[in-house]
Image (cartoon, rainbow, N blue to C red; front, top):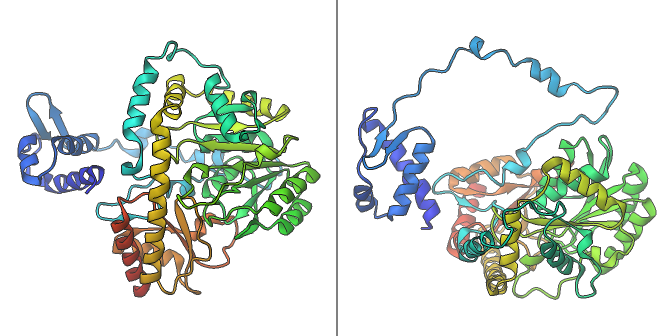
Length: 482
C-alpha cells in the first residue's frame, strides 16, 4: 500500500478510537503505534499531524500526543452578524446583462476531492505519487534555491531562460515561437483564465468543444462568458459545425484541445487543423489551444502533430501548456504564447491578477527540464501509460461488456466510456462510490445536454494495474446492481 493511502487509513483508525480517551489524556506513544500497525515512523507522524490539523489531537514536544479539549460552543448567530444581505449583492446584475456572472467550482473540485480510504480513484487528473519524479523535483528545488538571484523578483513575463525553453517546446525545430512571445504562468488553469478574461468581454459567447474540459466551462462562467458547445468526433472538433457556430453566435474565441482531447482523447486531423485556423481567421476570432497532454503520449504513440501555434504566423492562436500534469500537481508552472497586441493584453491581465510567478518555482522548473532526469521521466511515464491503457481496456472488456469505448487514444490519462442507453449516470457514479471506486460522471464535461450517458476513467491516479483491474471490477458490480 502506498504511504499516502496508509496515512489516511491510519488517521481514520485513530480518529475512531479517540473516544477511548478523556480530553487531555495521553495517547499511545509513536513507537507503540509503529509496532501495533506495522507502519513507518513517518506514516505515524503524518497521521497524528492530520488529527492535529483537525483539532482532535494536541502534540507536545518531548511529551507525546494528547486528546484535545473539546472546542467551545460557537457564538450565537446574532453575535456573528447577519450576512444574508450578501445573497442580494452577489446575485444582482446591473443593467440588462443576460449572462449573470456565477462562480461554481463544482466541476473543478470533482478532480480534487480526496477519495475515502479504501476507494480506488479512477477520476483523478494527476500522476500517482509513484509516477511523479519526486526525487528529481526535490533536487531541482534544492539547486534552484542556491542559484544567484533566485529569491529576487523575476521579470514580470517570466525568467528569460524558461521563456526560451517553452518557446522551443511550443514552436518546434523551426523556431516559429520566440521567447518574447511567451508569458510564464502559474500552471495551465491560470493560463486559461487569463486568456478568457483577456480575449472576451463579459456576456460574450465562447465556443468550446463538446464534450470538453470542465475547467474551461467553470472559468468561462466565472468570467461572465457564455460557453457554446461544438460537437467532437474521433477526428476532433466538427469543423462544419464550428463554421456554423461562428456564424450564429459572432463568437471571437474558440477553445480547443487538439491533442488527446479531454475527455474523448481525440486528435485533431490534419485537414481539420487547417480548417480551424482558416475559419478563425475569417471570423476575426482567436483560437485558444490547450496543449495539456503533449508530454503524455504513450510509448506506442505515432509521431505527434506540431502545435497549432507553430503553424500560425498571424497571431490567431493563443497557446497554453503546463508542466503540472507531467510532473506534480504542486509544480504549477505553465506558459501562454501569443503574437501581436494580444500578448500585451495577456501580460496586463496576469500582472493585475497575480503580479508574477515566484522566481524560485521558475528556477526549479528550469533545473528540472535541464537535468538528465527529465528525459528518463518522460520515457518511464510513456511506458507506464501504455501498460496501464492496455490493462484498463482489458478490464473494461472483461468486466463491462455493455460499455463502449469508441476511441482509444495513444496518449493522455483516461478513456471515455459510453454507458448503456438509459443508464442513470448520476446513480451509477453514486453506486460506484459505495462499491469502492470513484469515476467521473460524463455530465460534467458538457456545456449543454449530453447525447448519451458517459463516465471518464483515469488510469494515472492509481498505484498500478492491479488497482485498475479491481476498480473496473467494482464499477461492474455497481453497473450490474443498477
